[in-house]
Amino acid sequence: MADPAFHTPRTLEDAIFLLGDLKNAQLVSGGQWLVPRLRSQDVTPDHIVTTQHLEDLTGIRREDDCLIIGAAETHNAISLSSIVQKAIPELASLAARIGDQQVRNRGTIGGAFASDPEHTDYSLALLGLDGTLTTNKRELPAANFLESESTARLAPDEILISIRFRIPVSANYQKLAHPAANYAEAGLFVSHFEDGGARLVIAGKDQWPVRLTDAEDLLAAGNTEAVAELIKSRFSADPFFASRLVALLKRPPA
Image (cartoon, rainbow, N blue to C red):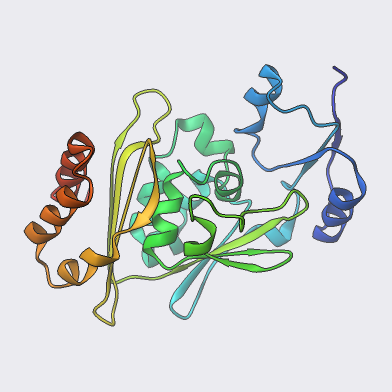
C-alpha cells in the first residue's frame, strides 16, 4: 500500500475544503488513535488531513457558567490549565488520568470524541456536565451524541471545533482502569449544580456512557445508599459490574 499524502491546512476553511475535495481522506488530530490502525491496516486512507495547526480548534476559556475547550487541546494541556483547574477541577484530574504520558502529551480531547466515544473518559464528563459538541456544521448535545446506536456522531467531512461543559458546584469522577489501556472498565461521574440538580453517569467495558436519571433526585438529596440499591437493581444481570459501580460511588473524591 502506498503511503497516504499528508496535508497540513492552516485555516479551518482550508481543512473543510480538503475533506470535501479529497477522496478517502482521514482527519487526524494527535494521531494516537490513527497510528496503530495504519500499522495494522485497519484503516487505509489515501490522504491524512491534520488539525494541529488550526487556531480555531485551540484555546480554553470560561463563558458565564460554561467552560469551552478547543478540540485540538491535548489531555496534558487540559490537566495543567489554570482555567480548567479553577472552573472544573475534576475535569483537569480526569484528563491527567487518561492513558500514559505519551498519550496525554499528543492525544486531544477532540480526537478522543471522534475516534472512540464509547471508551473515552471525557464522555462521562460530557454527559455529567450537560456538554455540547460544536462542529463546523452543527451543535451536538451530549445525550444525542452518546446514544449507543446514534446516527448523530461525526460525519467524515465534519470537524469538531470545541466542547462546552456546564460548570458544576462539585464533581467527582471515579474509574476502575484497564491495566494496559487505562480506559474505564467501570466508571462513574457525579456532578451537582447550583440549581440543586445532580447528574449520575456510568460506563464500562461493555456499557456505553449513560445517565441514570432515576437516581439523580436521590443523589441530589444525598441518599447514597438508595442510589446504590438502584444501581444494583438496574444492573442485576451483571452483579459484578454493579458491585464495581457501587464501590466507585462510595469512593471519596481523589
